[in-house]
Image 1 (cartoon, rainbow, N blue to C red):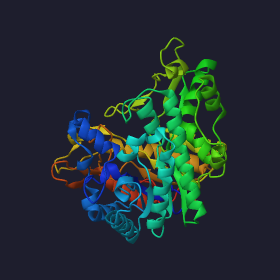
Image 2 (image 1 turned 135 degrees about the vertical axis):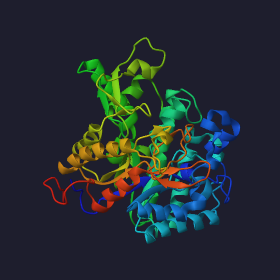
Image 3 (image 1 turned 180 degrees about the vertical axis):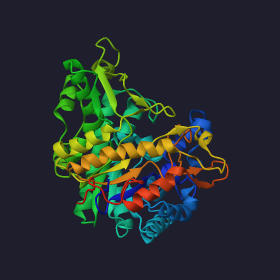
Image 4 (image 1 turned 45 degrees about the horizontal axis):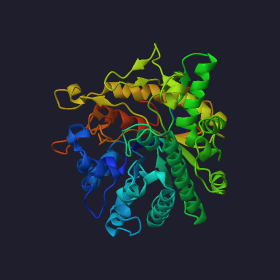
Length: 466
C-alpha cells in the first residue's frame, strides 16, 4: 500500500499550543493569556499559555527530533501577537525567531507549512470587538501581508486559518472560547468577518505575487443522518451547511451553500456586508485545502419545541454501532476520511488537499508506559493505520490528496483541557520538559521513510504512483 511519490508526511501544531513564553520576546497578550489571567480555575490543572511545550526555547532540539521521526513537512503557526504586538509595529525579535525556525526546518529537509491564525486573537483586537467587527478583517489582512513579506523567501505553503468555524461555534454558540455567548446572529456575523479576513489575505498574497500557494485548513466532520427519513436527512444537510460548507463552499467555490442562505433568511438573520464583499469572495478561491478529520457528526431531526434555534433544526444522536475511543470519548469512524476524499473529488473540483490533522487523544496515557519508560501506544498506531487504509483507497479512486499530517508531533497544550488528553508521537514531561519518543514515533518514521504502511512487502498490487 504505497502512497504517491513525494507524499507529504509530518505533523501539525500551532504557536499558542507549543511556544510557551507568552509574556516574553516582545509578545503581547492573546485572548488566551487574558482569559487565563482572569479565570485560571477554568483551565485544567491551572496550566496557562505561558507554560506550554516550550518550543520557543527548544525549537532547535525539536526540529532535530522531527527529522529523526522522518518528517518531510511540518505545519505550525505564527503568533500574531508576537509578530505584531500592537497590530502595527513589527517585532524584530519575532522576525528573527521565526526566520531561524523556518531556515532550520528547510536545512533538515522539512517543508514548513505556515498558518497565520490558530484561535489566538490578539487581546487588543478582542477588546475592540473581535470578530464581531469588520475592522478585524482589515487588521488580519495587514498582519498576513506583513508575514508574507517577512518570510516569503522561506515559506511556500501558506494557510490563512486553522478551523475557522471553531472560534465561531465555541465562542458564539458555546462557552469554550471567548466571548462565550449563545447568539446565532453574532455567530453568523463573526463567521462572515472571519471569511472576509481570509479572502483579504488571499487577495494580498496574489496581488503582490508572492511565491508559493495559499490555502486554508478546515475541520470537516461528515454529517450522517440517523435514517433516510426526510426530516433526518434535512437535519444532516443543515448541520453540514453550518459546520462544514459555511467555509468550504465559499473558499473553494466562491459562494455560500443554498441551504445555509435559506436558513439565514428563515431565521431573519441580518449579516452586515458591503456590496462588493461577495465578489471579493468569488474572485479569491484557495489553491489547496487542508482537512482536519477526527470524528463524524451523527444527526437526527430537531425538536420543534426546543428553546434554541439549532436544537429546533437538528440534534446529535448516538449511532448504535459506533466504535469509541475509550480513552477520549470520541467516536472513531475511519471511513469518514474516505467519504471526505470522494466528496472533494466529486463536489469541489478535485482541488489539491491534504490531511492536516488526524490523531487520537488519550487521557492518563502514562499507564501505558513499559518497564523501560516508553509509552506503548499501539492503539494510536492502529488508529492511524485504519485511517490511512481508507485514505489510500480514496487516493486510488482519484482523489487529489498529497499528504498526511498527524496531530501531533509532541504532547501539546490545548484549549481549556491543557495536557489532559495526549496526542503526540513524542511524550512531553510536564515536570522536566524532557521529550521521550512513544512507540508510535518509530512506527511513523518507518511509514514516512518507506512511503507505505510499515510491515508490508516492498511491492504490492495496491501501490499508487502518480
